[in-house]
Amino acid sequence: MARKIIIDTDPGQDDAVAILTALASPELELLGLSVVAGNVPLPLTTANALRVADLAGRPDLPVHAGCDRPLLEDLHTSEVVHGDSGLDGSELPPPSRAATPGHAVDWLVATLAAAPERSVTLCPIAPQTNLALAIRRAPEILRAVDRIVMMGGSAFYGGNASPAAEFNIFVDPHAAAIVFGAGVPITMIGLDCTHKALMPRWWLDDLVALGTAVGRTVAGMMDFNERYDRWRYGSEAGPLHDPCVIAYLLAPDLFGGKDCHVAIETGSPLTRGMTVVDWWGKTGLPANAHVVTEVDSDRLFRLLHERLARYG
Ligand code: RIB
Ligand code: CA
Image (cartoon, rainbow, N blue to C red; front, side, top):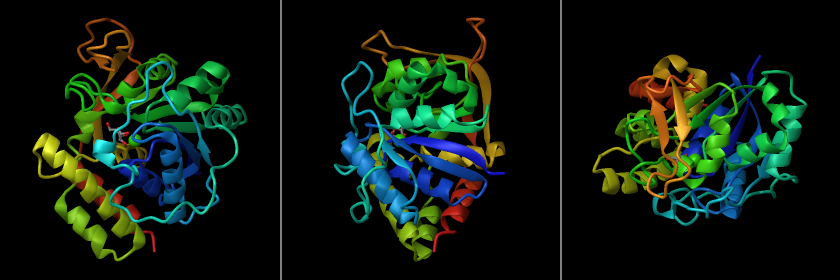
């Protein structure tokens, strides 16, 4: 039976690739998308999620708009990386439909409340505001969650939103603190891993060679993303963040890491959103996350290509 997942997302080009990969993978049953403000404001992330569902041929997929700002912090967006639309580099038409009625938090609560015990994997690839509010609203829903597999944080790599913090956690550190304190098994795929998932040229070229709308769109979006990464990091190839979450669900053996206690800095303006990873067990606190720091990049991109090639 397919693994039931929910993706919480702020598309975002890399979010789009994660969603497309999930929808091309029969091992996974994507119950729907809960959308949050992050890379760009909520109206745009919602429209982008709908556009990606259209591209995947899934106008039936539930797409619920959620929180338009963090729990306490002001919204911090990332047009410098993703462009004003959030999907720059793509040429997707406007959405064919409006968002599914109902706030994303209400949908998360209702869906998980009706789900069997430990039957759903939550995949936040964005600031975790929706998830945090759902947990606060109805903590009993956590019994339906088998694991939270997230893109976010950083153990040793430093930050991409500040010197100390990765974007998803930086934007809403209070939400992340609620999620990491929820007592649900977590897999944290952060920058230590994703900055080893550097997009090879052959991957982008092979996507174009597919001659499909998905291939062209993904290649165009990733080319757009890479211009920023080349400037910021001086690297020829850009890191691919969110699809690592879906690849982990499909092939966890591609990844490596360690169970650690992770705490979130919420009080310091200097280090807000830092994931304080107790890699060496200095605190004696029990591990609350499997922190992923390694990936077999070549096998990762072969897997992603194989799935994206399934679109006609
Ligand atoms: O730091 C990378 C993360 O921030 C990714 O989820 C990307 O989409 C942005 O949201
Ligand atoms: Ca994202």
